[in-house]
Image (cartoon, rainbow, N blue to C red):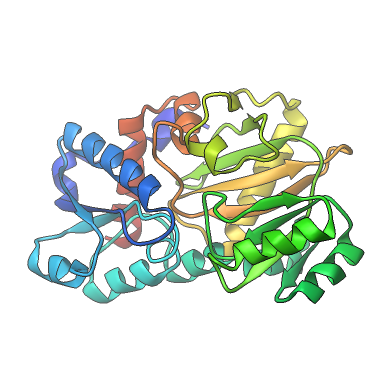
Length: 316
């Protein structure tokens, strides 16, 4: 992988007027505001004619009333990362960054992403869908403990919980349904966690994650100062290549375009397990894609321009 091959060769003026879409109404609004401001500042500093839109009820009026040549989507979670914003921009004829409608919608749905991976023989932890306390008991009997409970359509670890008994599982499911009507529970994989970013079809250096928390939760992602990030990730060359190949397969299965980040666990036997793929990863000062890009030789501004350049090449 060459840093030069990832960098944008497009002059800033060629992007036209760029709307940076951030904020929104999802549970990840606060993270999106931070990401969006960072992206907007980087674009403006690079000489791009960019302006921000905190996405709200007036979005349709803003899209039709403003001169917009393309959009940089920095909306995390539902309403921005799930295909709905992508569909709106398609209808408005506005090119945008990242994955298209189908890939965005699919990746936002953790359950159906797992089903696609399973159908292709890609490794992902065993799971069950929870709709009742009885489902919780059945899942516990089938999967054993510990388990991880996840709302199917949330990001940033919102509503997630690690559980070690049936009572805790039922309580975690009860909490998770506050965020999402569909909740899944997944077999806990004992071992190190990795996150791997993909940019313009190339895999960036994997990052090994470490946290004193029970798992890499919201606090560990965005607030804590004791979260550990290792680049190089510590894997032997052959295992790192295996991880990077698996990441590309996972993205291709979903139809990822432009950029994304895949979360992976490794068990005691060295086997990798796919957890999920994020189509609009965080771009805050705690975020992982900028960290991986820096390890590949791209600073934050170069990363943002590369993501934007892909929208020009892919969508005109």
